[in-house]
Image 1: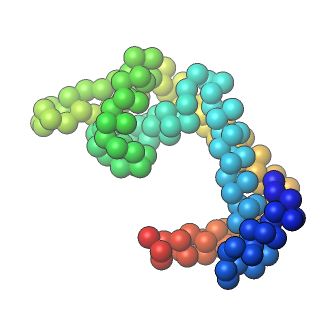
Image 2 (image 1 turned 135 degrees about the horizontal axis):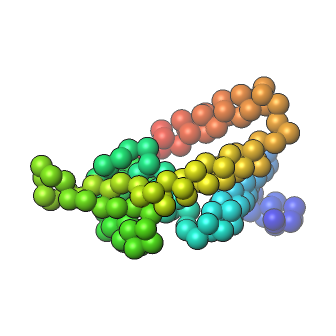
Length: 159
């Protein structure tokens, strides 16, 4: 957290940014960082990384998904997805099979051990969601959705 004096100096350098907008941005960044840290802490207890947890989740929701489709879902390059899948296959969480109709495609499936982990991950995801939203009324959550949707819209207009 930066001091008020440092914040004032920064605001002087950033034209067109109000103190409130700056505070919103700082709090938003802090929340994202904290969620990332909490996610890593909770998921790493299961012996995997958050990226692998997302991979396992998508694979469980879409049996037979290709490696390319997975890479798109995870927003990673195909080689990154391949390395992740190799590690997960080695640890017995997924099974990769060559597509019967198109030998160039490799499809992935969650193993029995992977399914057990998916069930644990569902509990972890519920804990993560509740950790951040605990104490917020349903109306607060609805307002938060509206504000985040506006933030998302504003950002997509610049992409």
